[in-house]
Length: 261
Image (spheres, rainbow, N blue to C red):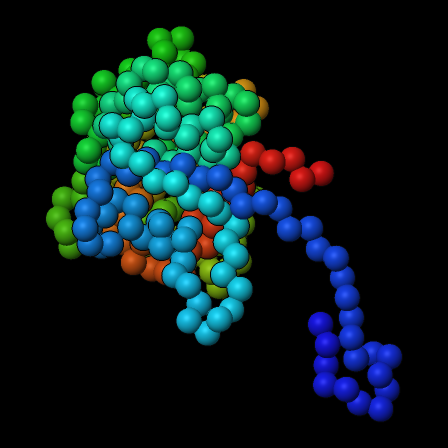
C-alpha cells in the first residue's frame, strides 16, 4: 500500500506478505435446473460463488472454483467427487448407491457436504434410506420426517434461535445483523429429527422448534443439512442479498477441508 508522496518519504509505503489459499473446489449438484436465474435451484447460489466480472477492471479472484452437474451425472465415474473440497446437494432426488459411496468416502477424508431440501427430493423415506443406515450411520445428520408448509402465503415461519458461537453463523451474532437472519420469511421446510452426535445450529419459531440447520461430523469431514430450499421457492433468504451472501460465504468457508494451521 502506498500514499501520495510527501516530504517524509519513509512512511509513504507499507508492505505485508499475506497467505492466499488456493480456491476451494466446490461441486454443486443442481436438482432443479432452469433457464432463468430466479427459477434455477442454484441460480442465486452460483451468483454468490461465481460473481460476474468487475466491469471496472478490479481483481475478480474468487475463493471458490465451482463445477455444476445434474443428479444424473453423479452416476458417471467422471463426476468430480474425489476432487471436491465442498459438495452441495441442492434439491436432489434419490441418488445412486455408487455416488453415495463415493461421497461418503470423500467426506470421511475431510471434505464438507451441504444438503439443501426442496420439492424434487421425492419420497423423504426413500431419500433418507439412500443416505442413512438403520444403525444411524450415514451422511444425513437427521432423519427426514415430513414436509411442513405455512397455512397460507400470508403467514410464515422465522428463525427463532441460532448458535451465535458457530463460525458459519457468527456474522449474524451482532445485534444489528441479527434480524437479517431472524426476520426472513420461511414458507416451507422439511421436519427432521437430529441423530445422535448432531448439533442443531438454527431453529424455527414453530411450536416444535423445528431445526433449520443441523451439523454432524462424518469421519474427518462434516455434513450440514439446511431443511429449507436454497432457492426462493420455500423462503425469501436468496432475495435478501445482505442475508444470503454472507450466509453462503461463511457456511462454505467453515466447511472447508483444508488445514490452515
